[in-house]
Length: 248
Image (cartoon, rainbow, N blue to C red):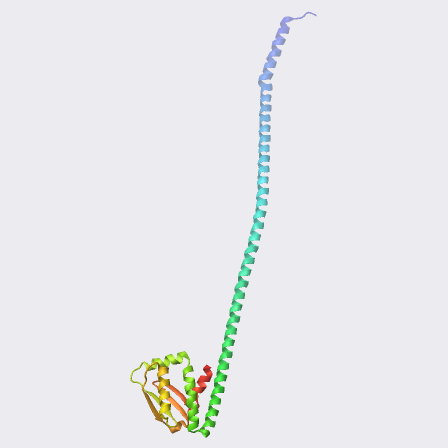
């Protein structure tokens, strides 16, 4: 069998043309499609990896934020507990203070009530005693009783309360006033001098004295100076001594 070089060359050319055609219209497009698919797959993988990385980052951020939120909740709960405890203590302190104040007020009111009751009881007892003594002394009235009353007045005058003395001296500042000393029996010269000295000491200055006699007093004295009146006689139930007893 002889080799036909012409045919061989033509077949070779046909083969090369076929290879070129296949490469041009089949292999290159297929390779291009494969490359594009590979690129797309790589891009998809890269996007997926990026998404996974982003998801991991977000998950980490979420876990961190969740942990921070738990810490914030714990802090908020602790702060709320502290505020509630502080408010409760403040209200308890306020309530205790109010209760203490109410107890003090109640104690003060009760103490005042007892004091008023005691004073009223004492005043009533003194008044009743003075009335009884006056009724008894009215049956024993006489010059001797009056002298004894005068001695008691002389003893008690210097012991008058300071506010009473200031009030009397404020009256004595008015000019033209006369100290009127009324007795159940006539006073002798010595008694009048003693009264004059006592009145001068009481008033802190010279005061004109006028001595009067009134049998209705039964025994004792009634001294008047302006609006101030001292009643130490049986008729007035010895009110001066009753008042002195209340201030004692």
